[in-house]
Image (cartoon, rainbow, N blue to C red; front, side):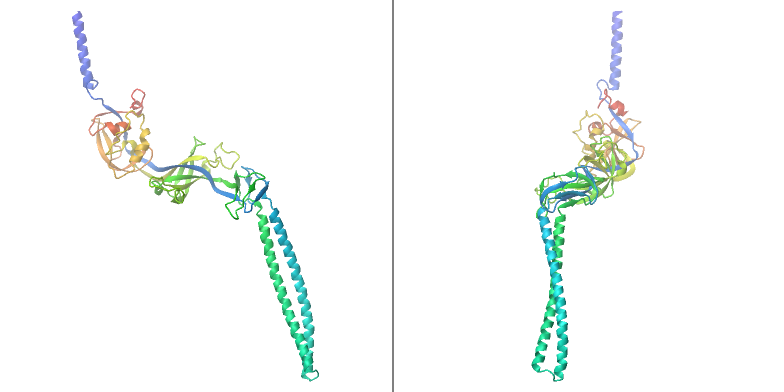
Length: 453
């Protein structure tokens, strides 16, 4: 009986070994498990991603044109101001005395004009009297009533009076010109005096206050001057981002954008490209440039108020929830195409990435790496077609178009509803080959804790 039981046990063991060998568990290569997805039409939006800072679209920096001590400071940082509102004053002592001297000189010159006009009136009256006498002497001389010497004396007196009258008239004209000059000096002194009083040039918010009451500031007449404050219109905000030179040609004014602000981690805001710099940010800098230096272009993206009008929190004391200087990431939608698309990790090049980690968990982890590699359209690209009848894969060349973080447009090489291998990334890059037998599975099973690739 014991021998019989032993033989039965040995037989069962042989059967189990045979079954295991036939299924590949013993002495056979393990079948690669893959996920499969059908190629289909999708809308793919290509984006250009850049980071930057939020700033007001309109920001005015104020400086004084005159130097002196700040004697009045009527606002504080964060105050809402209106155009023409008094902001601060600079001590006007020297300019005040200059203005008073100019006014005194103007008054003195005004009196000179009045005196010259009186002298002119007297000269005109004297000339009229002498002119009448001269005319009578002319008639008497023609009638031989007076002598030649008497006539000559009357004529000399007439010419002298006429010259004095012309001189008086010129004196009035000169006095009036001097009065105009004095008036201009008064205006200039008044304008200089007015520069000690600083008003807001626009409506907005005091976004930055750089001085305190009693500080001495430098004017802008001979140098850069001291920045007093900044007035910003916080109703319209924008993000100033740096776009790499490889992407700048894909960005156009009017492109839509999605903005993520670090301070509002769970929200996305809409924007639109309003301005693209014509020169790179490195042009005109004092530092020496090299071929290895990163070249970026400044792009301004306006935040659309409708996208944040219902946002709660943020800067409650300001017109918008965003404070100037907040960090933000912008995804600019440069192009949109609806067409046949496949997952981006399903496409590989002739030179596969041998460095891909076979233990990588999840297909999305290598998406950025794969996206960058597929940007070069001159390199041949392929996908693995899945044959459901034979459970094998077939290497097929494709040509691709634009891509986003998940999908890439396929221009040729595929038809709609064809099944292609979509993962895992490590298997597509390293393990699969043309004609290899595989096992179709789902993402949940493939990346579960027991069957992690």
